[in-house]
Length: 73
Image (cartoon, one colour):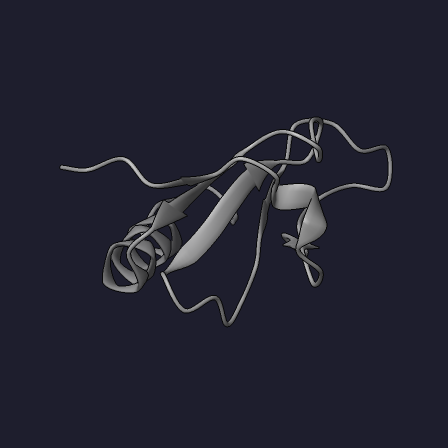
């Protein structure tokens, strides 16, 4: 598998956090919708760091898997 990253992810606009993220910040991931290469994912604590690009189908399967767990997503 080829790792795909966006080194300067902070230059992209439209990042969003999970609706389950609390107002105090904490450990969250952010995603960016509509990117042509897939779904960029970054650590919200380091917004100027890189983002990983996950294939859209893989991201969708990940979200479905999370929703199938007993933990709230």
